[in-house]
Length: 156
Image (cartoon, rainbow, N blue to C red; front, side, top):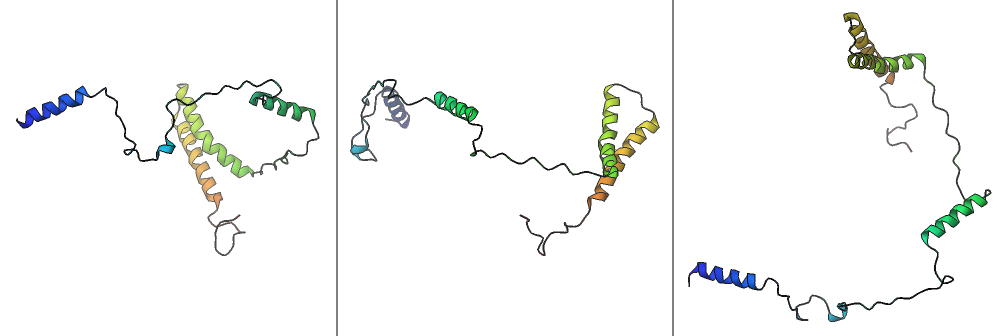
């Protein structure tokens, strides 16, 4: 026989045994026989009466909602305090933010509406944007906060 015919014969055997089921010997299993599951597990149907039936998730949720509505003096719930007021900013910072967003917004609006911009209008919008950016960066400060410790580590 030639090597080609040996390969053809092996291929025919593989194709012929394609739909065959493998028979496992208990020695081939990597687990003990006591851990094998039965082929068809036994099914047990137990009907419970309405009194014995545990409440469903929907019933439990409805009971919880009813309890919350009927008990307004419940002390187990945490009610957070009102948030502190937002910090106030000075006029210079407000103008700088307005310039930072106002200049590009004006340019986008004029481009979207096909407005003809004169040279000085374009220059002013770009200058306001750059001026707002520079003002915010200058006012940002470059040092660590005053309350940091000697090691500048994390503050908890």
